Image (cartoon, rainbow, N blue to C red; front, top):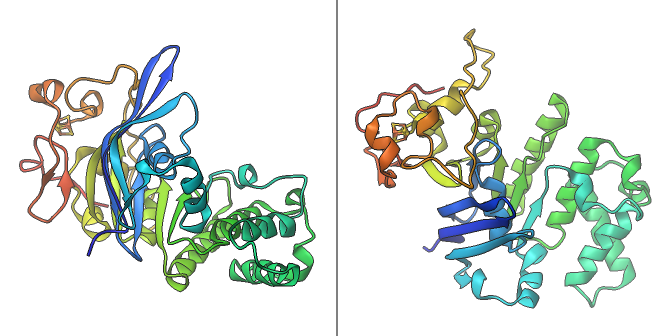
Length: 327
Ligand code: SF4
């Protein structure tokens, strides 16, 4: 069966005054039907730009330069802007790190949800739309939905705003949802509630979910498969359990070592250095300036993506020789 989403060789660059930022540089990315995939990496790794490219909402001065984005068997890069508008929301939706960006402070949440429903279902009566809004609010576990529809975004807590943003994204029953850092800025209890909501909704609504996050704890809890990006390129792709047990890429190992564990008293390791400047990225393997296992070839040759013995896809010259620590 063909995957729900199949991205190949995606390149999205930003043409800035300082130079060309190669934010996504040849990324392949697959999502199967009904699965939850984690798109992981530090900020600047290309995970958000990858999803904005798939939605075709890359902000200026960014441009998709190469690749193909097949969704439900159709090439999204061949679609007109009008066709994409119909796909966005109805088939592919996204929630953003800061839920206030998708909510208009001047309108009640009821009218904002109604607007999205009407946009894709023009024949519904006012009563039917209100019923659907209430259903959506119940779906995202908002209590007293009949009262809440009259609330303005500023009257809601951060967790509630995130749930409304999720409701807005799900208003038209998309088959694929990108959740971009959905729990950032929320306290731990609310974080757990939002994650459990997303997990339940994915199952009930029979959609696929892409969790965009830098937090490996979230990845462990919610996802079935993980794709690790580093500096705009794929570092590793694997089944979540296998990736945590036995990572094949030094960057994945470093991400796992930086996860706090309540059952282990170990020192957290900080990954030395920063994501490189993507105007002039390091030659060869882009991770080499930060990699403790780097050798000369790493500075010269880009490692190809290869399949390991346990089925991971990994871009490292030395995956056969390294015995990396899991979580
Ligand atoms: Fe490290 Fe070299 Fe592997 Fe890159 S190719 S991750 S620098 S060992």
